[in-house]
Image (cartoon, rainbow, N blue to C red; front, side, top):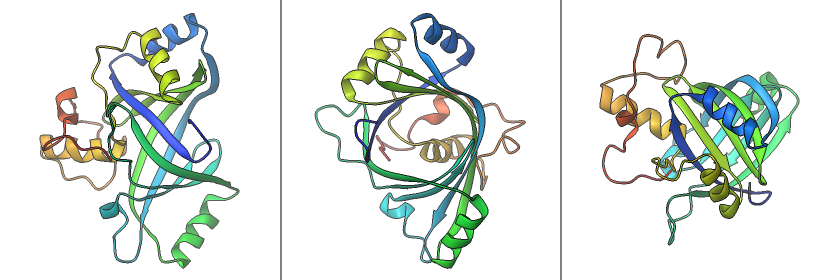
Length: 208
């Protein structure tokens, strides 16, 4: 992240994450977090207005538990090939207790999504290899210059950039494949093959 309370990142679809991991190790990236299962719960308020306003309230559990708040992405500027948004995150000690607190405050779960994530660092950028239920992605986060350096080192300059979040991609996939799934889980996608074209925005360019 470029500073403590912001998020600047970009995603790339990848068919072979093992090859990407080998490249990262060859060019000197440091493995900072081995592959770990991650469970995320997105929350809505009592009137279901958070998603409509582009606001994310998320409880995540992997090797630790974190509560995250994100505001809508900033309007694209001269460079719209990176995603910029405000983010604040705090680590909490107990998932179930935090769920209880959120419920008492009037929030309710509306979507669960899973992934396996492996994390590297290189050139002051964080590179995560995400195994999602619908496919694999490389996500690079950091200052814009650091992100661009890593893109060059991974030879991703000519690859399509995704500057939206995994939930928006989930919605795109559901639209293109005619699916009606409530959660982005491995069980739900066990028998489904997702082509890369299914991640395309339904209409126009959507950044969220």
